[in-house]
Each structure stands twice: as C-alpha cells, then as structure tokens.
Length: 406
Ligand code: AMP
Ligand code: MG
Image (cartoon, rainbow, N blue to C red; front, side, top):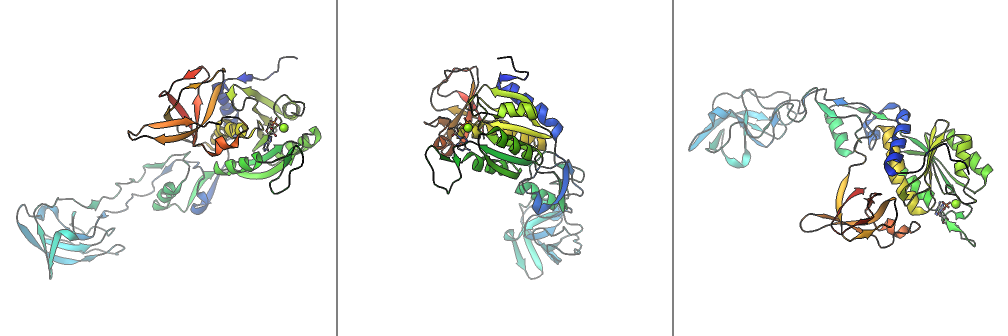
C-alpha cells in the first residue's frame, strides 16, 4: 500500500493544530439578533458601554440621604426632612446643611447629598430624622459608572452569551446583539445494523444512538442541525448523503465507517469527493477519527463506537465549532487528582470517563469509571468529565494531577 498523502496516526496536539488551522478560514458571519434570541450565541464584536452603569449616582439602600460632613462625631443629630425621592423619580429635592431626604434603593441621589443612612439606623420624629454617631460619610451610595464606565469593554468578542451576559447587554441599553451565525451541521449515522429507537430489532441489529447523541451535543454547542440521515454501508448511498449534506451545511459530522473494515467506505469517499486533512489520531478511544473537507463543508468522520463518537466529538468537533464561532473560553481547563493509579499500556493519549468529587479539603478527585470500553454507554452516562492521560505517561499514580475536558 502506498503512503497516504495526508497526515495519519498523528498525536493529539498535532491533530488539534490541523483542526484549528483548517477551521480558521471558516469563521462564521456575524448577524444582529434580538436579545432573547441571543441566548447561548457567541458575541461577534467587542461590546463597549454606551453609557455609565449605573447611569447616575443612586442609593444602595432604603434610608435617608444627607451630607456626610453633617454626620455627628458623637451623640446624635437631628436632620430636617426636606422631601422624598423614590426610584424612578423624575426630579430630586435639594438637600442642604443638616437636611435629609427619604430615599429608596435605586433612587437618584438628591443634589447636595453624598451619603445614605439606612432606615434601620435612624429615629424618625415627625419631620425630624435623628442620626447617631458612627455612620460613615459616603456610605450606601452607588456611583455613576462604578459597574461599567462609559467606553469600558463590557463583553469581549467571543463571549458566549449566557444569562448574566444578556443582563449586561440589556443594562447597557442594547436591544440586540451582533453574534456569529449558528454553524449549520448535517449529521449522518452510517451502518447496516442500525434501526431507529421505537422499532423492533431484527437479528444482528442495534438501535441507532450516535445520531441522537450527536444532534444533542451539537445543539448544546450552539449549532443548528440542518439534516439528520441514517445511511447504509453502501458507497452509492453514502456518496449521495455526503453530497446532499455538503450542499447545505457548514460542517458534516458522521458516525461509523471510518476504520479499515470492508464496510468502512468513508475515507475513500472523502478522498474522492473532497480532501482528507488527517485520518487517525493517537487517542483512545477514537483512533480512526477522520477529518477533511467536502467543498465548503468541513467534515468529521467519528468512529461508530458510541464512546468513541462522544469523545472525538468533545475533543475535535467541539474544538472546531469554537474556532468557527471565534468562541473564547470554550475549553476552560480544570485539573483534578486521580483517585487511583492508572496504567495505560499503549502510546496514545487516553480520555478516561471519570466521576468527579470534592473532598473535605476542597480537592477535586477524578475516579475513572470501571467500564472504559469504547462501546459501553454506561461509562459515559455515569461520568462527569473526561480526564486526559497524555500520550507519554504510561502510568499515573494515585494523587497525580490530570487535565479534565468538560
Ligand atoms: P464502525 O465505526 O462503523 O465500525 O462501528 C463500530 C461500532 O459502533 C459497531 O459495533 C457499530 O455497530 C457501532 N455503531 C456504529 N454506528 C452506531 C450508531 N449510530 N449507534 C450506535 N452504535 C453504532
Ligand atoms: Mg459501521
């Protein structure tokens, strides 16, 4: 057999490097969407505060606004009540020497006042408000711009817009947000043995689960799944499915058919119809993973074993989607200690399905699931994270640190 003209059996770092380089030109276009539609989307521009937040100095508490210089040093002092100011007030009373105004949380500070004494700390006696010594000048006031000053970078491009970020946008007056278009992804589940859930199994058949999982993983990652196909291991059918997917998707994700078995047609089809960027990476599970391109669509061929599909999705496809979206912090790295010694016995990076638990000292421990078989869904369903055992480590002892993939 002649040597392939694409990288093969490459290490994890090299594989991710190729994915990053190939995805960079596929950055998705930006589009403006209304705030409710911006949830979980990725911001496409740096967002600067168009105004101060808070927009004006206001009270942080319910109480009485006065001048800090009038506070008694000892004993107590009576202040004359000059008026009320509630949140939303269109104007405020002026507060002069030894005067105060009743104020509610969020109400603009009256002219002259720079301090709020909370209601619980005063005695109200008709139109007189008695304040004791011990109050701090300047207390309980939120200054204009103390949260975000006008012109501050409020949210950086690449930020995933979760509820707190949506609140920032709204508070800064943005009715919509410029976000990356959702990646359009087509899913293809290959295999003659596959039957959809809900239908009875014939001899040698299994229920299709990778397609269902991949659609859910893609939606979780913020993709729009534009097509889902179940295709037999027949070159003509696979070819038609690939071409159909390529005509409508930014990315195609298939499961199965990428290894070297007689029914594994996808590598040859990809080479014929498009281009292979790499085939096979030194990772366990998921060694046969295939990456390439079909016209304008990026293509990932994930191995059919359900755990291999899940792991290679997490490691490669999720990484590619983040790159296309320009998403930062999609791969926040966490570390944990291994709760038991692990011997690898192979020179590949391994991603172990692990349960996570924190001990009383606050140390995070990763316990590998007992069932690490690449066909075993239980290990996946009962785990919290993937722990990366680097290629070069043949053995990791109990207590050693590992990197977690969420
Ligand atoms: P393959 O990568 O096509 O050689 O498949 C490897 C293993 O994964 C085989 O046992 C397949 O039956 C199984 N498999 C492939 N595709 C799926 C799928 N969509 N759902 C569940 N299992 C699958
Ligand atoms: Mg197959």
